[in-house]
Image (tube, rainbow, N blue to C red; front, side, top):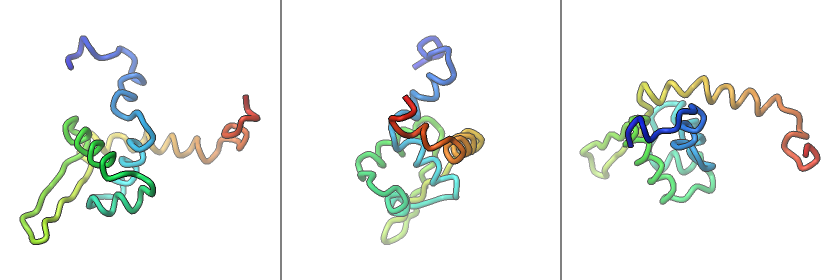
Length: 112
């Protein structure tokens, strides 16, 4: 994809990479530091191995996450955020702040 094919809107660009329920939560977990695949699965209760693998591969291909494989027995693979990925901290902080301060009615059908 080139610049001409990307949406002009920054929110639309963000959602191209972070759509779906797990993308932002994976980044949230990696904000705590490097983690192994199994550690991420444990923290993200309910995520399938397939979904986690696909998201990590996408983030790696887009420069958000690095994957380091160590030549050990058994093999050890560690994922961590790149400097670009770490730039998402204020975005996640703002989402968290809104989520914990929003009135309960915002999360129920009564708000409609």
